[in-house]
Length: 238
Image 1: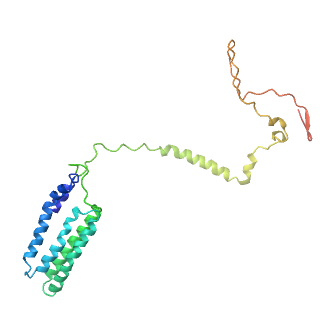
Image 2 (image 1 turned 30 degrees about the horizontal axis):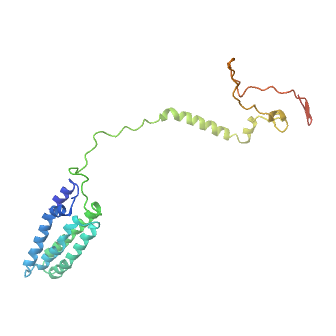
Image 3 (image 1 turned 90 degrees about the horizontal axis):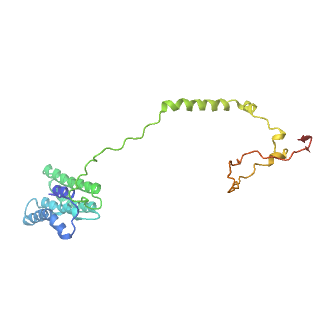
């Protein structure tokens, strides 16, 4: 009955009202009540402790209506039943080992149920998001193909050549400075005043209505400068 209820929950959405939920739980609650009634009718039985162990712990199947801690609820019912399984062990462990194995098996069943609930229904029974959803169907189309890989074989030689050239220059040590160009006095701005005058800032040309502009002066065009004839220290600037 519990398995059928779980299959039903996986194929439909949660009940909209408490009355609907009670109707769905009716088969489970009826079986639990039947077990408890059977125990009460057989109080004089030699196996009353056995019946009590089942009767006290079988409500664990009602975890499907418990939220948000169904797992601890199952454990609580299992602990209640072990009060009577311990009595069975005390009475039968020296007489018949079958009763011992029976107690262990029943406790193990409820322990595994608790593990299942904790893993798959941690905060309560998981219903389907919509009726008839059940197990999700696989996608109709596959995933898009991955982007093409870079041609490693073509780029690797270029990378190696660049690295080889870089390491070759580094390995020159102090000799690498020999390839540097010497800065003469005429290249220094504090000695050559003409270098301090940069290019003129760019200005939009004035457009005449009668004479359209034929060309635009480039911002980098050379600028005419007045002739220089002066002395800078020991050097004449012409």
